[in-house]
Image 1 (tube, rainbow, N blue to C red):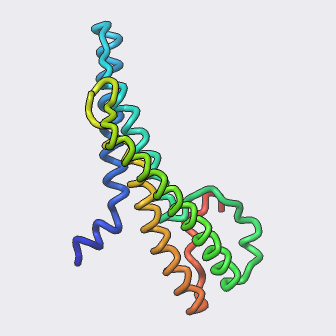
Image 2 (spheres, one colour):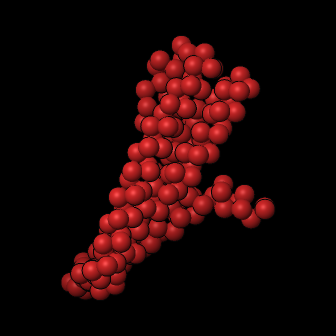
Length: 170
């Protein structure tokens, strides 16, 4: 159980760190190869591109977890804890619907790619591995939205302040 808590708490952080380090190292190697040896590879560009795509989708899930998406908080300062909880629950439901639709269509895209055996231009490996970034991101987002929804319902039930995430300007 302790391991599952650690994974739940830090999964996105470790995935983001992994893809970021892979992106930075590959990009540095490719710049060095291009500038010093006047040679570059196709695989380096693809690794950087697909690492960035994974970074974006996993980062979106991390933002849902931490409630770090861009929002306008001016009106939230004037609302009661109950009204804030209801507004956040409404936002969770809307985002949940979007995540379910996006998850369905992104899985459809992965399925079509697998069915026709499409491969990347440089690495010549199945595009499924890279197209999976979108369903993985929306799957994580779906999970984090469920957690957020239950946390907000608990706040509404108990009458406590809803989790609002970190403020950018305070």
